Image 1: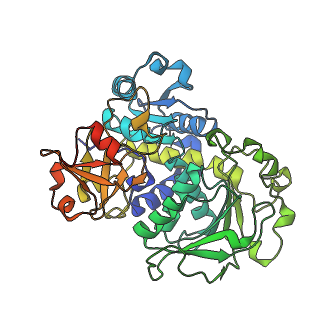
Image 2: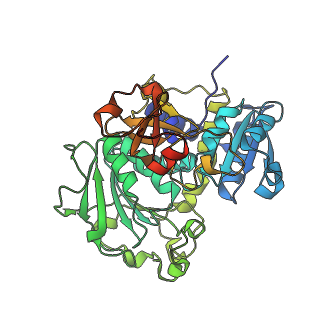
Length: 453
């Protein structure tokens, strides 16, 4: 029996598997009506606890075109979650007799990883809060690959809301993995999180620096851009090379809407009045001649309707390609499609493999993930015990297994003696990994019964 494969993160696929999926998607795209014999008798369950149009419908269309069937819960209010049912119980019931594969969208970050642990059938992440949207990333990569014939060496500008857009974060990691050059040019106040830049530098060995790109009206001066390039001498710290790299060519611009639904309490929702709107007049000149304009949709006002007839507009084509690439993914996860991919080790950043490569810290006592939208804080998921990958031992750096937020614990306690030490103290480093208990501060340690006495 083939082992269950989930698709929670784009890192769950090797690079060769992704490219093989693209080739398979090309075969499906050539005649979408010719593949009803691929997955007959199989059932897809779409569980969407957040609104969706394109993602849900494209998955359902993909399964129907493969000859399978679909059952759907298209909003949170139609599920037993309103009665307090846990996500684990939901997927245990829906998987197996009800369906052969589950596609999940959920507001809490890391929910898809929890679902994958408890479901007996493959789980596909269709977006978990502001964390990841890996099938959108597959669609974006596939669009670029078809348009440009390659991914390595492309100059891709990511613009707009870089703080809350889950598509941006997933796409940035994937493009860096395939050797693209990235330019981050945010709307003011919505800069790419430093944690994303740190991970790009650490896990993908890229060179991160400030750049003098060019100005897009409403996005701020080009001097605010960040340039990420692969295969350069690794820098010890971010932005040590402030040499104003000039960007003279762009292969694609990926524009995002303002994620109003994710704005924090102290942020101004009226900033939409000042959010940029792109039109063809802004992109004249040699550097924009061969660019493609992309957008994950839905758009609001950030791309003018005048752009729709421009041959450089790719966003509707991008949405259409979501069907064949999702057909390929579903058929593969269901064991109905064999990929012509050479065996390949996953990228070192691949979270699906990290638990075997890095120690995992799991404890109901002490440290909690600091991300308030992490699934470990979800009201109905109290059975989910915080888990962290040990990214660095001394001083300790931990990454939440579910949502990827990182934390540097201030204190380490001994599980048996209950004695407490500063995390950078020699005594703390002598505590074996199995006996360590991490804490954010003394109050947290005291509440758990740890102290210096």
